[in-house]
Image (cartoon, rainbow, N blue to C red; front, top):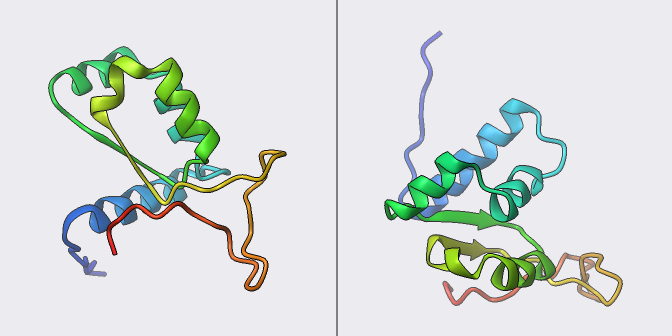
Length: 110
């Protein structure tokens, strides 16, 4: 069977590829590997960052982003965050009172 691939421009293609890889390797929680990479990068990951690579973190919570800004300040030039989930005072994802949709920060890409 011949596979067909859809090539998407820019970040959307990268994000969808990351999501497909995550699904293929069986990650239970979308942020597990991202959380580990954000707060506890391997030596190889740090070396790639020092070489100018940027990691796009998708769907992290505002608390995770805030912790990274405090604890990983020396690496922020290598981080980009999209669809940051707003949390309530207890740390759970905040929901729109009308639609029930999870609230995310506006990334300014509209």
